[in-house]
Length: 68
Image (cartoon, rainbow, N blue to C red):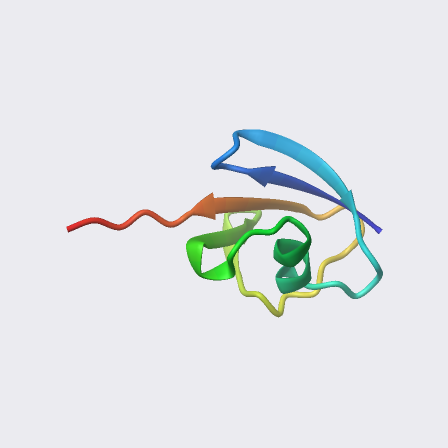
């Protein structure tokens, strides 16, 4: 299946080929992104690492910023 991904920190859109029934955790692993450093969304809704991806999903990966 193919998934479209927008990586906010790199400001780029990519299309990635994944195995059926892949989840967000697997996607982040392929992209070499530490899951604790990002929030993933689909259609402006936060989705968790165990969310099962579907063909043609459009996912956004946003960097978490903290300060003090």
